[in-house]
Image 1: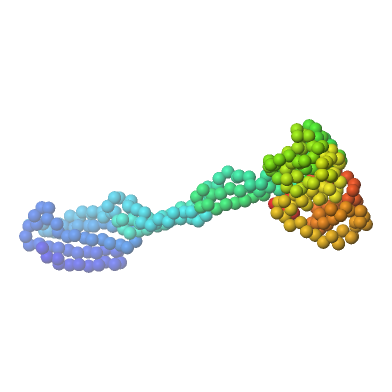
Image 2 (image 1 turned 60 degrees about the horizontal axis):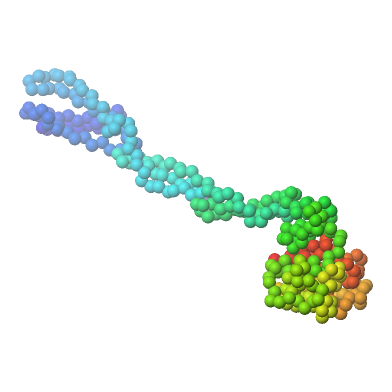
Length: 341
Ligand SMILES: [Zn+2]
Ligand SMILES: [Zn+2]
Ligand SMILES: [Zn+2]
């Protein structure tokens, strides 16, 4: 076989070649191998074989056209050759490349979005304070916090007919009720304007300390062993918080005076490791400062300096007056906010 002509017909996009053979070509003989290559998408083309002579037959014009197509019709065989997985917040992508022609394209894999857990409440909202809740993504660990709006229904004071939630003591009574430091005097009554007795105050401080047990009973003859405040008085005596009004008397049912109240709270604070010192001169601003009992002066100065007491009328301390349950609730709230949080 002799390759006798090869012509590239660029105008018509053709390659023309011819062959001739002096001898008969045996059936099944491969005459030519044509390799097509193209560096992007596949192109379909066709191959035309024109037979001019065969054996003794001359001037033949037999023409057969063979389509040359992608091996599997027009389908590419795309396989993923590169893959970047999407994250919660960023898109990923897959690169597909045709194993036959090398053509490739990229397919975006959309960001997954966070896989958030349910909201869990860190701090519940109350009637006066917003709360806080948070959730986290189980995939990337991202956390998100959100404010819970004030909830007017989350108000323990509302249960009591004699508490007015528009009054100055509202936050204080909510605090003592929510924490269990104080309870109602009845199912529907809190008695905000009643005086607190010494036995009641010691009970409140005892609850604030977590109701620990005391080694032995206090040596007061007026504290019955089965009185509701007996454990509290024993604990407070052991801690040096109460000393009694005399060596043998505690007077549990006596109304507490503001200076006694502040003294007990100061001793309680000291027992909790809080430094209770103050400049006694601070009391000089008050018209009735010289009526404060000597034992109560430093405690009262400390309470004034730290804003624990400021609800007294005018510029007076009224150390020997009475303290109401609402006032005590407010003082306990201020104490906790200032020192115990
Ligand atoms: Zn392909
Ligand atoms: Zn995430
Ligand atoms: Zn409330």
